[in-house]
Image (cartoon, rainbow, N blue to C red; front, side, top):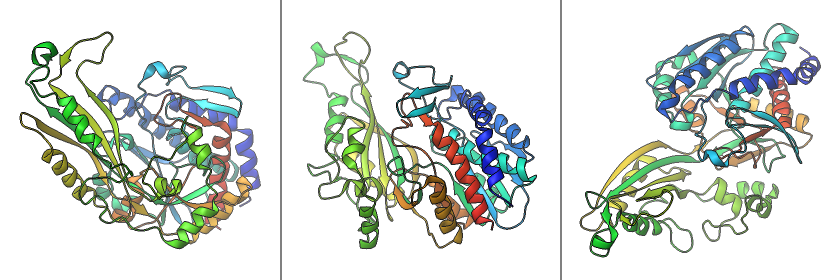
Length: 457
């Protein structure tokens, strides 16, 4: 089958493809907020209908949480599974958005046209690049080049509580020769990358309680325990002055970076000054003695993601709060055990509690790090295809984020995962004014068409 007519079709149909993405972006499928449960159902229904419009047998599968979407198309050659997620992050703080996050717009910027809206880059825009590549291929050739399973999740941004049970229950249906995942980005916003290393993720919410009610700080200040003070003292000791995490056993299972990998990463010539400068920073703040790329890709982290307690509204209220809470996350590498680390962190916090204070913990996910093998021939075929589309050599790279599904595919379905994506460093995913470059969307569709062609020859 010739690839050129497919690429030409993609080019000519870009406005229609963009319009379909805007439709999906208008659905506020925020998985972590129960108020949007119905909208997650709506997004799943939209995807089922869209897959059906190109002849893919698809269905919405209910779970205890938000539904999965599964579609199948038969064909010759290898069996590919494509995974993406249709749920999105909350939009708070809403006042920092320039426009309604669920009224997506095409905007002109100094760097070119972008699609602005929640989920545009993470992950609806990326998901639709593969769907649009399949649409173009089907329109030109009448059939897709191989057997493909489409697997879309609605809980990725809320810890994927239904994912593993669903995969176990439907293992035979989902198992393929290789999994394709589009939830990553370009290296330094310009070089296509196949991700071979992902950090794991552990989340904990802590609530420390002191007095049984908020107290008048004039009457009780100085004599009563202040939970905010207790919490900030504990979390202030999470790292030492050199950036080393102080939780006992935290570095168990953390490997040294192999010399050959370090050499490959050095050759990428990572511009960390620009990377930090783009967000108004200038000094790497991680572990002393580590390169910035090591800190992002191969070292574990402990971060405070949110902290609150007492009165935080307008004006002033002189209270001594009853409770103080924080959300803490850990990015994991190597063989770090998220469950053992959870136990150790909780014990570390509890041991530092003074009298008259109690602590409650609430778990938010626990997934180990993943490392992908590149021995499957599809990896090198895809790397060559990406190099052709982007006019630069594609790289095998690490990723600081956590995409647990990659490890789950290996653990539960015994298949490797190939992660490629077209996001840029400044896409502001998880932040106000999220965007996706229209060029990334366009070239992402073309890239998938090239990959489909390369891996099915």
